[in-house]
Length: 449
Image 1 (cartoon, helix red, strand yellow):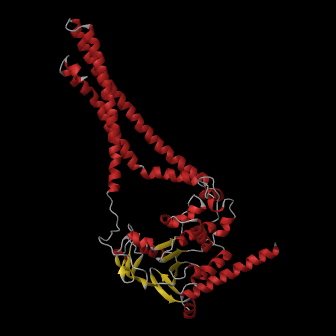
Image 2 (image 1 turned 90 degrees about the vertical axis):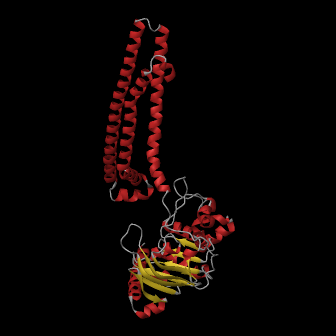
């Protein structure tokens, strides 16, 4: 089009370009403003998604109704959405006005060119055919320039958000792999945490300071203590989700940082305090514990029996083929049944180290007693670490460590700690009194019924 227009005068393609500059300015300016608006309101947009989830999710429904929180969260959602909508409408209005002004400038440029061409035609310097060609060329040139500017605006907008993506992709993991990791040794002696100091990223309060602990191989070790004592932090260090800032985590005298992360994690199985509830079949919920080995039905059923999950599974119409969770119209389980399923997932992997974080917290007393009766047989020949608030669970361990504020204050067997009369003995007495009172209340209620 520029080549055609050059035949009428060198200034005409320049006029065409100048007429589109205001539109280019509008595109760049609006793209920048919209990007800054998105960056500024990232938290607000995320909050609207959170409020929507609280109002519509099954997990929050009971408290929403019982505590009459629906109107509160609905008000927060509507107020925030209204503000975001007003600001987006204002952005759109400003863009529309600026676009209209840019279009008028483009029309003025075309009108000026047409006036000049009309003057030339009136003097007999141009024919009507030349006029028709000029109008078509100028109009098509403007249309293509507008299309080019629209595409450039989209590219510019995407590039601005791509900058955030590249910043994310450039983040380096804090866990560094050894350049030549040795083969992972079999756990023969112990896992030792020696003078370990650790502080979570973004926190100024250390979770552990000069912490020392020994977990003997082939035995059951229990950690008890108040919330915030640092028990769960130990799991994350043993799994190498983090590395300590000071000290060493060692397996048979070798720092775990000298081994590959994959080899460490392959030899550990964990029941986390809040295990994932996979909205999938029962079979897959257990198989995810060792998916790489492609476990068969016999292995899955063995793991389910070991965790005491076979009883609730047998009550499902499709047993191991039953889909769980409401996302895909599956069956729902109680909290304790989900926990037993997670236990089965942990037991499926034949790992050297078994870590159980509150393994019986969602079980009733009958299910807990049944599982504990078989626990020693389940972990025979392997190293087990139990983190629990229930002393009836902790008493199954060979060694119990009592933690307080990131340090071990008592250690010994259940009988030894009771004899010592320290923190463990006091807590045991209080917990047993509560259990006796609960049992009496339950028995009394059943007799009245």
